[in-house]
Image (cartoon, rainbow, N blue to C red; front, side, top):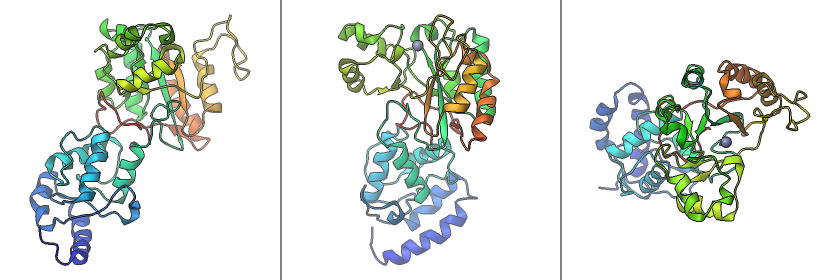
Amino acid sequence: MPATFPAVRKALRRIAPALATALIPLAAVSQAAPAQAATLTCSSSTPISQRPTIGYGDRGTCVAYAQGLLKKAFFYSGPTTGYWNSDAQTGMAQFATAYRALRRDGSINAAGWTLLEKVNAPFDKFKCGNGSSDKVLLVFDDLPTSTSSYQALIDAAKTGGYGIGIAPNGMHIKSGLVDVNAARARGLLVVDHTYDHYLLTQLSYDKVVWEITQPYNGSNYVRPPYGGINSTVESILAKYKKNDCLWNVDPRDWAKSTSRAPLEVPDFKVTPQQAADYIVGNAWGGSTVVVHLNHLGSDASLLRYIDNGLRARGLSLCRNWGRASNASMPNMYCL
Ligand SMILES: [Zn+2]
């Protein structure tokens, strides 16, 4: 790979592909691009504004670094060779589609670099994958009242473009009550709520491992029942590469008349509508809400109601992925 006139190459590469890639199908770009390939040098400490655009056939440390970011986000499983091949290009195109980036041709420009870094930011257990500053993530736990109410909820999410989380227990997936693949097909976040619904802090080490490694859910996001964690549970989650998925807004949609409800919900019998109003009034940008499939989730029309209410405050619900989501998800689901 000759390294002559890098500045000229760089300038040419900026002009021509920008026009071509918007119109030419992916396969055609793969054929056309190698002639423009270059050796690119950058690292994690290079400011995004100074990183080069990566396209098919490019090589170098900058390419290897990008492959590593894409791999960490589970969109690329090949080696970090520093050669932007068709696998890396396909992975980047899928990544861009998931996060609804404008450029989806498998190349990486400044916007792509920004997304790759944001998605791989350290996981915050109270945000459960909400890396946004202006969106609210709802994660629905436990079990729906019926297969049809579950279907209505995930269909309403798909129709509205809402990115919600579904956190059913493995036993309800095994029984057929919840279809997690249907949620993934709609670009939603699937979270493992363990197989049973035990307080993990009261189980043996081996039983905790068993609860989070049953095959029915398969997610690398785990919401411990009751939010019950301690250092042992956290170490087990880390050992099995599971993200600990808690919350920082609780409308107590499950609360009964015998429970104390928050002041904002005056009626001790919290209705789905009251829980929705609590979220509209109290959630903030970047917050994550614990709700339940059999409470708030029993009224699918409330997704639109909540989103409309949040928009009046300059916020919105998270957006679903622009493609199917995966079992192993990046650190950030919502940007
Ligand atoms: Zn639960």
